[in-house]
Image (cartoon, rainbow, N blue to C red; front, side, top):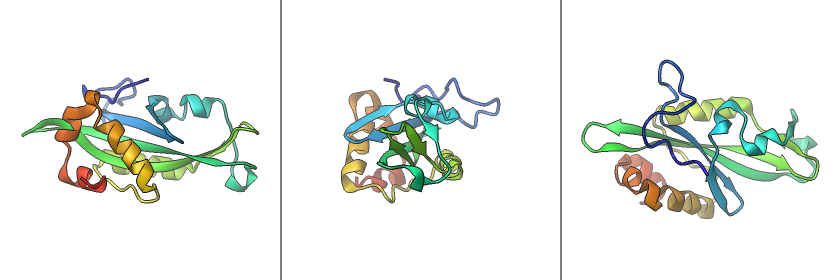
Length: 156
């Protein structure tokens, strides 16, 4: 399992640092995990799928949320969570097929990098699972140093 990029750097950072501090947090049924291969469309889930152009082509789709989470170094408090924007990845395991909107994926990534937080579409249970994951011992200081807007989006 990968951890949130707490050092503010990442192997997928571009020369301008735009992707620094960006992580992809997956919520797959009751499992929450990070797979930063998603930044390049190569998460473990995505590698095993053939993607279709229309979600209607999937016979038994299930939704997996991918939440772009960013951290930022704040002058007063140090590093903390800054942005969180989800997008849907639809998987049909029986057909080994998947669907996602590349435009949505990229736009949500950009919004998270800008520090936006909007968890619309996610159920209260999914939000809570994400919240508990982000508040875990490894990330406790990032949660405590998060922006007010970030914590409020999770009901804190």
